[in-house]
Length: 88
Image 1: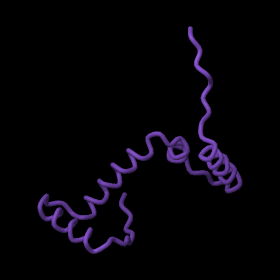
Image 2: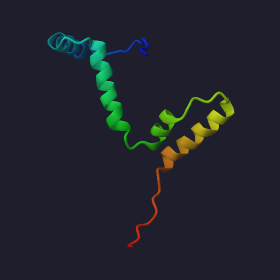
Image 3: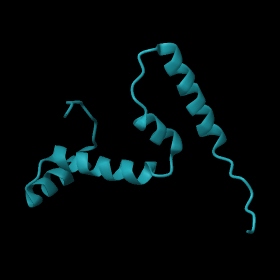
Image 4: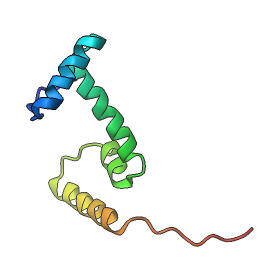
């Protein structure tokens, strides 16, 4: 499902997008969507808090949701501590 939103882009970037759009016969919106999908895939692959938020179903209980969000913020700040390596 697509959602219409307004974004602000500098004129130089917009002009380049128009040229690219014409040369590859694709809409600027499609170019931006593809770029965002690639960016999210790359930037979030090691982000556990992001992964948990996107995989967790939407909660209706606001108190429970706030508690989980607070825990995820702490996780983001602390990072993940790994156990020590042992030789088997």
